[in-house]
Image 1: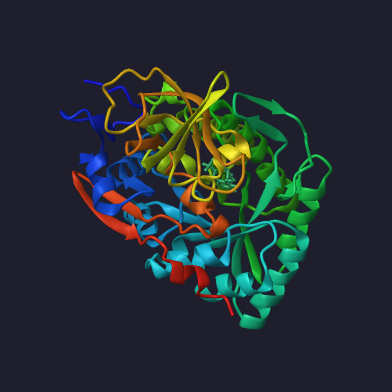
Image 2: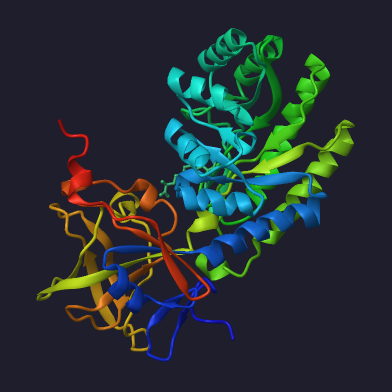
Length: 433
Ligand code: LLP
């Protein structure tokens, strides 16, 4: 039976409690305390497998998904996704360090970022990362110089702005060049940059990269991106005599909740068709394809548990339900007014007919997790669950108001274990002098 939630990892048990991967969330809250992040290993592995099988089914296995670790970077998640055969996309020395500390083979790590520091570039080169995605000419020159000094040839891809704006519900061909990332196609900047890269002795240009947005709900913009990028790929082949081998189409796919059944295992179907058609037309070999999903791999796998501490009803205005967390551990409503499903985890079977504004404990009015959302009638001491918090929550958390970041518990087949310890007050002053 299909359950009422967006993901199969959530369910309700005989006590009317919310479960995740077979664990009772109310028991998790008792055992580990709140606020608590919970991640489902089953769900993470399942999405990884679905992406992987999309390459096998539709593209002869000639590609790999890289997990965009910015969505949630920690050692255990790096281990899990690479065990599932994914590569990793990192965007900072810190993400690279985490991946290496998790034991990930550097060859399977791809280094991104629009302003990598010298220190980060040295670290990436010394670690032997798979490739560096070059954002600008200054960076290209730095990589060339560092590689020459170290006597190595560094594999690079170049980040291209393909002029496709894929925002949430729609995508448009904008030709827009106003982005801090990469080289623009429209004004010839990308072609000039590629020429320079090809002329460098200590870098080997292997491919092109683009990223057209986040929270993209269908595959069509990726098909267009593949077409635009292959046209440029072929121009490099015909005009510069340089044959590239890799094409990276970036991240961003995330089906809407209502479409949760749409399979990630089909990601490559339309893209593959478009790539094969273009390569046939140009008479070139099909490239090895990378994609970089972040959110879709971890988002539904996660939820956050809180204890309701106070309920403040302001007559004719609204009811604030205060929790023991807030914008310091989930800043996404404050930043983007992101939608979240909230529910009382110990009363899931009761009607969700109470309109609540979920308020955090930070000292500012904008510290809300959701406004005017329907939940079961709350009482002080209830466990409130916020679903789909696996992506860009822990990774964007802070110590605002000197709150400690909550622990992260991984669940799998009814078992739970801590994968990131909760911070202590000592942690807060560790670097204070
Ligand atoms: N590749 C590149 C180059 C990216 O910039 C991103 C996301 C991804 C891959 C992964 O995209 P995803 O599959 O996760 O959509 N903090 C925002 C999200 C920012 C995404 C930035 N780049 C949020 O909380 O919604």
